[in-house]
Every structure is written in structure tokens, then in C-alpha cells.
Length: 242
Length: 237
Ligand SMILES: Nc1ncnc2c1ncn2[C@@H]1O[C@H](COP(=O)(O)OP(=O)(O)OP(=O)(O)O)[C@@H](O)[C@H]1O
Ligand SMILES: [Mg+2]
Image (cartoon, rainbow over all chains, first blue to last red):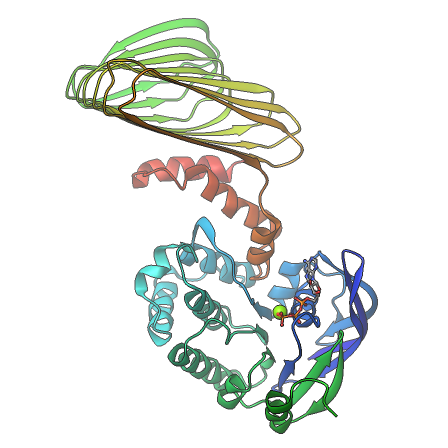
């Protein structure tokens, strides 16, 4: 599904990713853990195509297609979804308008408004998001946790096939994290080919969504790969302990 | 009652209208430099929808006591001079001016409060589409007899390219017992906004359209049919 080979990426002429390699197959769940500033969000931004991040070398393939030079929206329409570490707010862009526009950008036929609203109502209820949020401007006045829930709402509405969760767990309280993970797990159950890349600092989220592989990332590259035990080990002993 | 003003391709036209009851006014001038004066009567509500294009109009509202004046304007290329004389107690003025600018234009506004207990709230938004000049010149004059007046204005210009945009606000206050605020911002659509919308599969063009619509009409409280008219303008940009 996703294949990253020898990727070198810089931001404002500072090298961040360094010969980065990663392969994620259909239905797999990968987790990346690593210290602050090691380049985890850089990785998620560069997979998504953020133009601030420059690919110096290497390639990213999605379903066999090299996507290095595709625009952000093209990648999204291929099924890549980035749940952001810090989702922004936009005054005047109504949540439901925005999500409906995004669905219509992907589908050939515009979505039926009645069905769309029914889906939105159901999913907001599942996620315990107040219904009025549907009609509010995107994330305006929303707390950090509410913004994260809104990202999960968008996953359920837009139905991506490869999902990056960049620190979904930061900002979510214990109950909200449970609710979000429950929703994501249900989504994965209904979409068996969907793959997940979970970026996190804590094993807790991985206890809810069991990873196939856990990677330790240091200085812009993966230094160790294992299973759940690696996550617990990293929590106990810190990074790069031998 | 409804009044429709749609002078087109007309220069040096003069018009004077006296409002005697609650009235909706639709202004749809094109390529004109009309001098329009609107006189109000006390205790009336006036709601104006302005969709003019390419104008150099001189428009004056004389606002009487207890008048409620609402203006929502979405115009393309506007070098109008707008004067609002708030001459009556308890008058309430709400103005949203949104301008889409292609050529060089200067939009001048003057708000004069001369009686007590009046309120005005002005939002000026412009989208400067080309590398042209655009100015908002906004004067607020609060005279001596206007105790307990509230005057608020918010000005923003978004440059779509490298336009030469400026906001020149000016406030002259001769009474201490008032509240006056103003803000001014000139900038562009934030890259982060575009990135976020595009990560959901929305094309750059469509994302800009969403942001444009938000910027131009979000602060207006429009009725459904008014919103439809403004949406049609935005979709045709
Ligand atoms: N847009 C940017 N402009 C300048 N520097 C950047 C930008 N994005 C990232 N960086 C720099 O790149 C490095 C990696 O940042 P990144 O956000 O990828 O780290 P991270 O692994 O996600 O860290 P954290 O765990 O704190 O989220 C940091 O030194 C950061 O300052
Ligand atoms: Mg990060």
C-alpha cells in the first residue's frame, strides 16, 4: 500500500528525514515512536504533500504509484488521510459544508444531502460530539480534544484507505481517547484493507488499537522495529537504549 | 415596501429618496456614478442589499431617530463614497461591505454620529484579486452631542496576488462618554488553511472558493434569498 524508499527530506534547508524506509501493506497497523523533533510530523506532512517539506532524494509510492510530485488534494482523493497533530480552525467555513465539499470532490455523483446529514448526525453521536458542531465554523472555539474528535469524524465521513494519526492521543481525555479508538476500530472492521500509521509517545493508544509493527525513530530514520513489546520497552527505558 | 435601484451605464445621475415606512432597498448599479441620497423617517427599518459593479457612486444616508439601518453589500470594483449621517437618537446602523477588487479603486466611507445613544457597527472586507491598488478610507466622526455612542469598525483586505492594499482609518472623537473600536488587517489566505482543506481532497480552486465565501459573507446575517444572490456572485468570480 505505502512504500517509502531512501527518503531524504529537508525543511528550510535543514535535513530532517535521513534515508528513511518504511513499507506498509494492506490492513497493517504500524506505530512510530520517537523523541520530540525527530521528524515524525515531517514524515506525515511529506506523505501528504505539504510543499514546505522538500524531498531531496528517495520516493514515496502509494498502491504502486509514485506520488512524490502529486498535489495534496490528489493524494487525499487517492485515499490518504492525515489526522493532524494540531488541527487548525477556519472562521466562516462551516463544518458540514466543508465535509460535504470534500466528499463531493472524491465522488462522481454529489452526495444526497439528506443521507449526508443523516450520516453526520449518526457519526457525531457515535463520537459524542455535540450536534451543533456540525453547523459551526471548522474548529472555531473548539478545544484541543474536540478538534481531534473532529478529525476522527472526518475519517468516518471521508472513508480513506490509508490513515496517519499524528498524535491523536495528545489532547484527548481518557474517555475521549477510548471513544475515538473504538470508532477507528469499527471503521477498520468495515474496511479491512485500510492501513494505519499511528504516531505516538505513549503505548496507551496502542493498547486500544493493536499494532502489527512498532518502530523506533531517531534522527529522521527508523532504528528499531518490533511488536507491542517494543512500545512498552520504550516507555519504560526511553529511546535508543541498548 | 421594496425599492429597486438599478441604474446602468449612466453618469452624473442624481437621485433622492425619502423613506417613510419599513423598506427593503436593492441597489444594483453598474458602470455608474450616481449621486444617491436616502432620507429616512424616524422609527423605520431599512434593509439594503447592494450588488453594484464598477461604480463611482456618492451615496449618503441621513439616519433619523430610532432608525434601524442594515446594509449588506457585495460589490465588484467599487470606488464609492459612502456617508452615513447618524442624526437621530437611538439609531442603529449595521454595515457589511464586501468588495472584490480587480482594478484600482478607493472606497471612502464617512460615519458621523451627532446624537446620543446611537450605535454603528461596520465591517469592511475586500479581496484584492490582481496586482492593483485598493484602499479603504474610513473616517469615524463622533461629535460633542453624541454621548453613549458605540462605534465599531473592522477592516480587512486579503491580497490574492501582490496587490497594493491599504486601510486608512481615521477617528475623530469629541465626546468622552463613548465606546469606539477599530481593527485593520491586510494579508493573504493562510497557507495552513489551504493545506488543511486540500488534505481532505478539495482542490486548490475549490478551497479558495470556500475561503473566499467565508471571508466575504461570513459576518453578514443574510436571509436565505439574499444569501443565494451573494452565492451566485461568488460562484461567478
Ligand atoms: N514548517 C517547519 N519549519 C521549520 N522547521 C520545521 C518545520 N516543521 C518541522 N520543523 C523542524 O523539523 C524538526 C522535526 O520536526 P517534527 O515536527 O517532524 O518532529 P516530531 O518528531 O513530530 O516531534 P514531536 O514529537 O514534538 O511532535 C524539528 O526540529 C522542527 O523544528
Ligand atoms: Mg510531531
